[in-house]
Image (cartoon, rainbow, N blue to C red; front, top):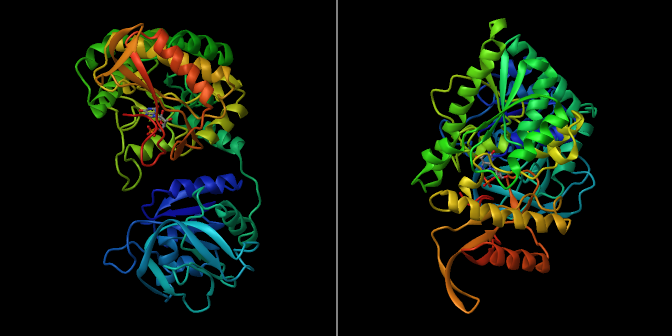
Length: 516
Ligand code: XMP
């Protein structure tokens, strides 16, 4: 494999993902793993990630020099690059000028790993420490105002380093650099794709589960559908899917999911109407994290009830159900603070929102992947486009799109507005252009309007169309004005109590996609 050594970066999984995009197999390992253990994995190349520490401070994570002496090609990125420079005798110090974000970078040598680069290019940086002098034997390949050594290489030892982040999309030639490293410098073939991930997971799931019964929480979204299809491929009829109607679904969604999913996969499905239960538990709650925790817990309790039903039905074989499949993706994990040292942005219902006393062992075959990779796997597994290309919809549903307390009345109102927006965006052919369009009800905000010569005092609806590649970052979508106008007119005409429609024009960051 290619080893990606994680120094506590926000982007370590993103590096692994870029390696997969280059059709090469990769594994993420912690920096605390010993050099011997790393080398025992027979790595074909090693990439050192960024991280928040400063190499020269006491306790800063480093790496055993053996890693650089084993003849394995190594690419250091940001902190990883500084570790390489520092361990091999270069000079690393506080930068005269910190560089954060887009940075003009001068390329001084376009022969090696930067072959084909224009002399000036934009890179994306995030550093307050810089390599002042490269270690002996290294050629300096690039510099910026704040980084005298912004890239370096010693081709004879197959050691390479860059100060910038080639793994983020904001570095336009980033993927090219990673591919040059993997294919040219390390000589690796393109021999890894979605089918390998499927084979790998199928084998792992079979080994783990044996002949036990398994349930899978199905939401109707891409992630859980792909997770279910993958587990079904591994263990067939031992799998039962559970679809929970928590009362926070969109218009017509429950019927559609039940129908489409069973038709497409033939997997056993239990549908549970738990709306009473969820809405009672959410009564009077308006704080977003509390909503998320309540919803996460209620999901698990509902699965536990379904577990009893499955045991009863399969009881004759003495079946036990101790596994729960979830379609958790990597962005859910990082945002819930699940990455090594990562901050909790919001508790995704299937990660940070889980109760502590959960009785299931979780199977999460997609936990290290990003949405577009999951879509590729879904297609490989034979799922139809209308499931694979469904726009994301969060597990907590409309519950986190009503800003304020959740009531049945507010849900009905939001459901209508959401249905109108979805219908008009589809009609305009924008389904694939936009990643998703949350429709948000600002339930406790009131503004004055005039309708039919009468004064109104109603709530606004927010439209939040975004474009994104993996939900980690997003931009607001430039939906044509006439489409927005139609949506606005229809919502204010058809949804009693809404007298204003507003458009959210914020990217992520600084905002998140959902409002809660
Ligand atoms: P944010 O709001 O964090 O959303 O920018 C990123 C993506 O994740 C979805 N989302 C969730 N999905 N459970 C889910 O299954 C959740 O608790 C959850 N919260 C946010 C959101 O719709 C967007 O696609």
